[in-house]
Length: 228
Image (cartoon, helix red, strand yellow):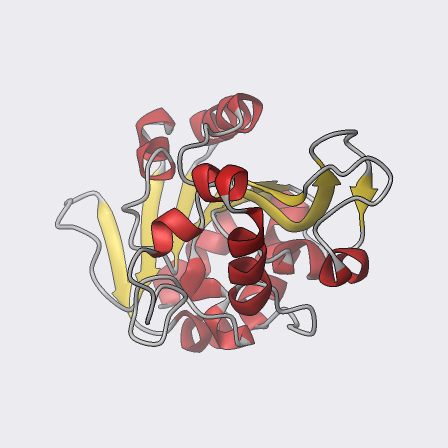
């Protein structure tokens, strides 16, 4: 722990790669654990797919409204500490779509899979608030479907975000993976773009691999960030 603290002080270009485990302490469920977002659904990936949005927009809307939006959620100590560190000397690249890093004040942030609260009409591109979306997913003026700007199954990642993430990682001297199993692609491939000399830390409840390059802390990230 002391070594990680020292590294966060000494290194100049720090990148946090984060996943659902960062936001679970804020009351937002992860995806695949017992009681997670996918729990109790026979085909959850279809429910969260482009196909479902196109073919059954009402089904898609009910799923995201009932399971994904937590507008009252607040950033926790992990979000706040990462924002403070990266606003001075680094970046956060997150898989999370909950907007909590932004809410914590992170200025150097890539929301790799988008943001649930970035809502727009597919027909005319007009933006909508969460409060408007909570009332209806249909834009009354043109009949367009309102949706969150997140990457669904069967959709491609934003190439600008991928390119920017790759460029940031190529300059990083310290990379810290937090709260992610690092199994979702292409996010899990981002380390391929890293500076070969970068030091890598992993803070996760479970090991994510046996790579000798990884310095792992198997613990609850909240406990670790409370000590940083």
